Image 1 (cartoon, rainbow, N blue to C red):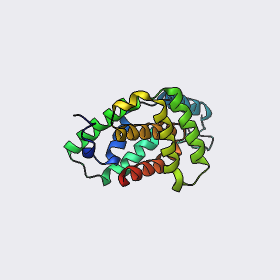
Image 2: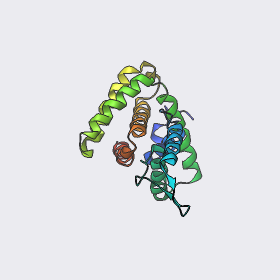
Image 3: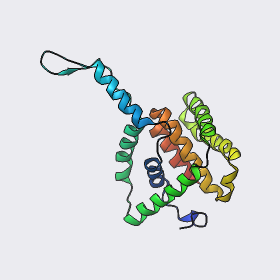
Image 4: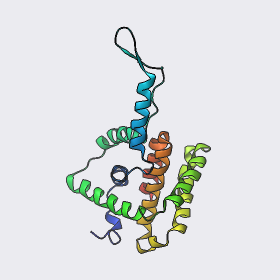
Length: 187
């Protein structure tokens, strides 16, 4: 399928974004970090005289993967998807991942750090604007992206920037997901 010629036939944004987030590997090695965190927590627990495990009273912070799993369970039941739509979403996400892979990690990291700071200090109503500016900055740094249709590149870079920010700050996942879906849904 040639995604550059069939942009009008891209499946609904929510489905493509979920597929993208599931298919694209974590950039920060999070699975290992989650394992290390859980191992650390096991050492702070102790077994009381009844054989029950006691904890220090703090819940572990939510990870990106945990919240992504929760987001899927919240969003997917509301999406009426047949097998063809699901396949098209996976294919589209795979193409977007191929485009997103053009980003250099240092450029992406700087853009994600800058966007994270802006999101922390602003209201959700302006998040789309901050995200759009971050994507425009990324577009200036990737000459090879010109071989793809501009809309696909913008979508790929938006998804990748969102994912990178949410890996760093998992609490942004639900709100930023909504911002991205609304942004592409309105265009």
